[in-house]
Image (cartoon, rainbow, N blue to C red; front, side):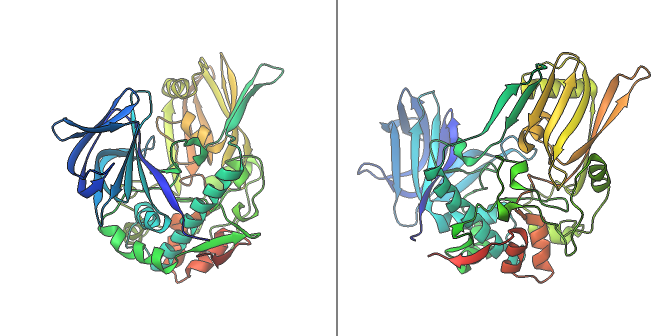
Length: 441
C-alpha cells in the first residue's frame, strides 16, 4: 500500500475567496504570488490580484506549489453550525484548486499527502501539549478513519436516512450524516469530517512527531482498516455505531465503559435518569484545569460542562427553535419523549408532540440539531417539563451527558489515560474492541 493523496475542501461554496500565495504557485505555465481575490463569473473561477484585476480564469483553476510555498485563506469559517463557530485566517501547504460551482459560488480545495494532512488534523483537533501517547493514538485513529472512508466511498452507495408516516399519520424523520455528503472533494476541513486548520507552529511540534512516529500504522479488524470514529467526551460510556448511523453492528465500534471497571449500560428510562444525574469516576471526568489546558485547543476550553450539562428553554422559545430547524409547526409543544436509547444513554429516536403535529426524529445528530440553535452537546439527555396550574408546559429542561456522538475514541478520556501512563496501543485497543495495530506503509 502506498501513501495516498487526498483533496480537502477548505472553503465550500463561498461568494468569493480572499487570501495570499506565500511563495510561488504555477497555473498553466505562469507564476503567481502575493495577495489574491477569486470570484465566480458564470462557470469560471476568476483569479484576480489584490486590486481586483483579472489574471486568469477557468472553470477549475489548479495552482501547483513551488518548493516550500504555502497559501493563506482569509475568513475561513470553522466549527460550522456548532457553538464555537468563528472565522480565522489559516495557512496551508500543498496544491490549491479553485472551482466554480455554477451557482455563483467558489470552492477552494487543498491537495496534499495523507501524512502531511494528518500533521494538521492532530494539532487542530487537540492541543500540541497533550500527552505524547495520546497524540500517537490520535494519529493512528485519524489515519484509519480517513483511509477507511476513502475505501468505503469507492465501494458503497450513500445512505443518509428516511422519512415515513405510520397509520396514525405520525411522521418519522430518521437521518444520519457521513462524509459522503461531500461531492467535490474527499473530506471537508471542519468537524463534519476532521478538523483541518492548516499549518502553524503546532504542526511542527509534538503532533507532527506523533504522526511521523506512527507513519503508515492503522487499526485493523478482520483484515480491513477500521472506520475509527472519535468524539470529544463520551460522558462515561461510549456508544454503539448503530445509535448514530445506519442499522448495522460494527464490532470495534461498540459500547465500552470509559473506566477501569465497567458501568452498567443504559437499558431503561430509569437507567438513563440514574446515569445522567450521576457523576461517574470515568476517564473523561477531568476536573484538572491544567490537564484540560494541555489537551484542548483554546476554543474548546470554553466548554467546561462536557461531562454533565443542562439546557433550559421557555416553551415558546423551544417551539421557535424546533420550527426553524425541522420546518414543522407543532403548535403548542406538549411533550418530548425518548423512544430508543443506546447503552451510553444517547437517544436515537425521539418523539416530539404538539397540538398540531407529532414527529419521531432520529438519529443522534438530527436530534441535537432540532433541539438547539446550534447543536446540543449530545443526545444523551433526560427531559424535565415545567407546567402551569392547568398542566400546560411552560418550559423544558434538558439534562445531559457527554459531548459528541460518543462512538469510538473518547478524546478527553484517551488523553487522561495517557496522562496516567497508558500507551497508545493500550488506549486504542480499549476503545476499539478486537482491533489490532498494523503498519501498511
